[in-house]
Length: 262
Image (tube, rainbow, N blue to C red):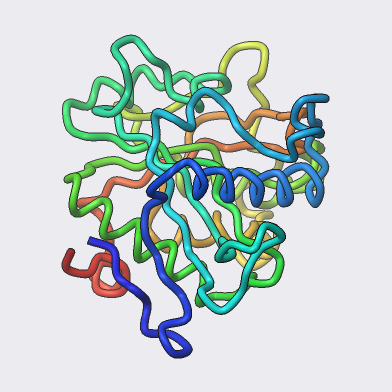
């Protein structure tokens, strides 16, 4: 299902984590990116272990890009990037998704087919380039095909906690990419932040895209929708929106690029 990527002498490999050691390497990368770099608030236990870990990790698959030419601080092959993938069919009965801590997913969860939560996406600072992001998305495309995923969704984050600083981006997403009502996630009461923060005609696409992190721009290229309302996550120092991709509506060029044969 997952193959070595023909890039720089097959230096990189994209596949799912296979054991606890590989999951720990992913959790160390997540701690480095989210806590040390982006300023998320770590507990004493997290600071001591230098791991970003929670009770969702054992329930999910973990997609990673490995750099076989480089080792990490523990002498193992370095993880260049990672994604946490949680299929509904993997979850114990009654288990909520991580995103439900911020968004109501009732409409989305009524969809009868397989749905997949995307989360904890991160790339090591040494690999912030289009090639590594493409490898993650290609691996994700193979995963979606293998498990017949019909809808992907998850929290996508803007750095910082002031929604007014990203008003053009939030307004553009709300006005142009709001999810169909029959599937639309909604920010929970008490956390709801209005995304429409300016007149529609005053928001230029170029200015909006300039404010968006690469991951959100990638979701837009895949034809994503967004839920109603944003949420400020002060623990992670972000403003979150809920994104959703209907896989049957992916464009042909996207499918050719990322959904290879298994």
